[in-house]
Amino acid sequence: MSLVSSEVMLKTTTGYSGLQIGLHWLIAILIVTAWFTGEGAGEAMETIEEGGVAGFVPHVAIGLAILAFVVLRVLVRLGRGAPAAPGAPGSLSVTAADWGHRLLYLMMIAVPIGGLSTFFQLADVGEIHGLAANALMIVILGHALMALYHQYVLKDGLLRRMMKAG
Ligand code: HEM
Image 1 (spheres, rainbow, N blue to C red):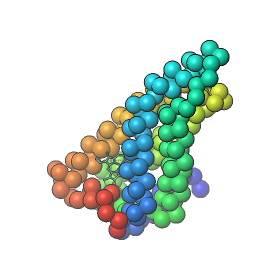
Image 2: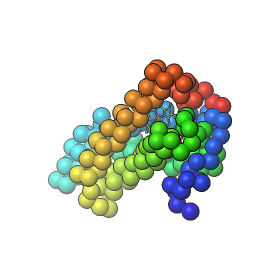
Image 3: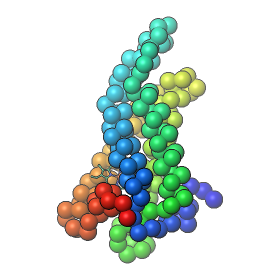
Image 4: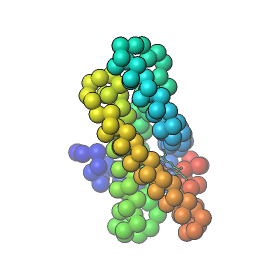
């Protein structure tokens, strides 16, 4: 069964677990940090290409950590499930939220894999990695704005679901 199959990804619970909440915010911090440290990795790549030694590259270490935490997060998500998005089942807003979350999971896996493949010279997809990272930041911005819209305009307490285990 595929990762995005509705039966698997829509297993519903009454709330997120402490582990799910912890991973959500830890990964969020790591992704933002990775985005801001990307330039350093570009410079390290140039050093390597010129025959030099790059030493410790924070962006690469963060990328590896993101990948490990996201794999763990997906496994927890598949095993435990998540609360249903607020709204009528099958409505446009619920469908958009479900697909938006799937897109986030896909990009959270694909972007670090692309970066690591480039750094460890398994595939030269550095440029695509940079563009995909920017696209991920835009999707994240939309996701955060939607969360804030739910919390402060619709006032349905959505943000609390990612703050307190339930
Ligand atoms: C790097 C940044 C972020 C990423 C990658 C991310 C990713 C995700 C994903 C994949 C989910 C779905 C969880 C699931 O049901 O399996 C989720 C849920 C959620 N996120 Fe984020 N998120 C990020 C930042 C934020 C920020 C900044 C906010 C708040 C402003 C936020 C608020 C929420 C809330 C409230 C939920 C729960 C939605 C619900 O219960 O339907 N996230 N996030």
